[in-house]
Image 1 (cartoon, rainbow, N blue to C red):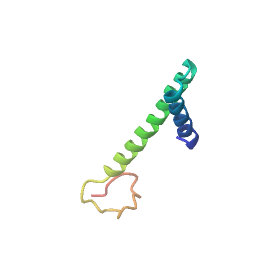
Image 2 (cartoon, rainbow, N blue to C red):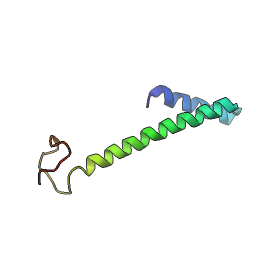
Image 3 (cartoon, helix red, strand yellow):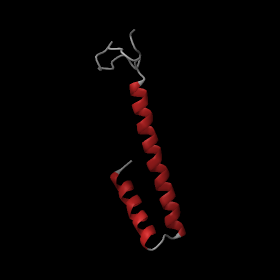
Image 4 (cartoon, one colour):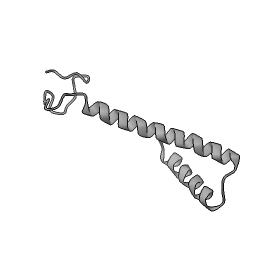
Length: 73
């Protein structure tokens, strides 16, 4: 997800509020929202995977994560 995508989403949202969007712009907005949401979902998934890589209380690698996601306990 790039800054330009977020900028364009904001431009289209502002235009939609102020004067409305053409059918092409509505399609573009939907496509950009889909890209944005996919990026957010991936970020959340990555964070959850990082948290769940080790069971609670595990300190086998002191947060170095050099076990390819495998806890050594």
